[in-house]
Structure formats: structure tokens, C-alpha cells
Image 1 (tube, rainbow, N blue to C red):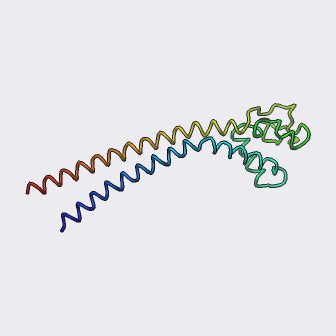
Image 2: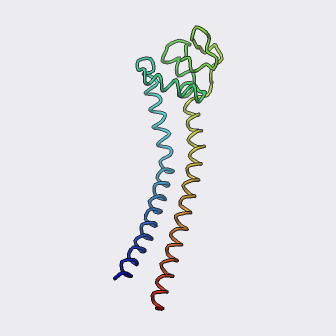
Image 3: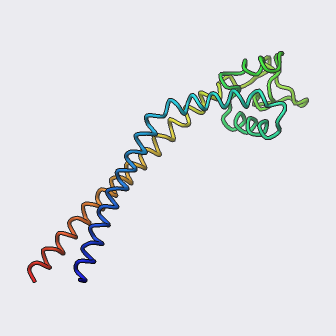
Length: 162
């Protein structure tokens, strides 16, 4: 009875490792396939929040942090802000060197890179790193499955010879 239980446990361990590995592969493939949909959703959300910049302090703070840290301006560029403000003013975080009066305009030195492009670049850069880590973990799990299978066979052979 002891052997049956331990054999069942070993086999279940192998099955669970394989199931987890298959699920990780599926999630990775879905993430890769849905990559374009994520970019479209990102652009849509950036555009919708941009229109609330001057009315919502939380959105303003998020945009300010994004533009300051990523050194970018607007969804597709600084001109996005001129459509909203109806003049040449930009949020102060679009200018690396904001003047003493806190104003930032298209006539001053401002970030010309769009925040959407910056975010796509970041997602692609870190997505590759995350993908690489995932492949490494998957390889380690595959080795674990192989070792568990070898161990189960070794134990089974020892039991049969006794």
C-alpha cells in the first residue's frame, strides 16, 4: 500500500509539473498574440485620459509623472496638447527646463517624443526580458519533469528487483 501511494504521488507530481508548463506556454502565446490589442488599448486609454488632464487631479498627476519620467509629451506628440488647450501651451512636464513662471509652450525647449512611442519601446524592451525569464523558468521546469520521471523509473526498477 505504501508503494502505491508514493507511486501515485510521484506520478501526480510529474503530471502537475507538465500541466503548469503547458499553461505557461499557453499564457505566453496568448500574450504574444494579443500584443497589438494591448497597444491599441494603451493608445485609446492615453487619449481618453488626456482630455481629462485639466479637470481631474489624479489623471494630471499620472500624466505629469509619465511625461517627466519618460521624457515625452502627449500621446502622439506635443501637438496633442495644443488641440486640447486651443493654444500653444503645454503641461509643465513637457519641458525639461520649466521657466520660473511655470509655463511651457511649443516655442520653448520641450520633449518632442510621443509618450505612446516611449511606452511601446519600454514594453518591447521589458517584454523581451520578461519573455526570456519565462523561457528560463520553463526550461528549469522541463528539467524538473525529466528528473522526476527518471527518479520515478529508478525507484520502480529498484522495487521490481527486490
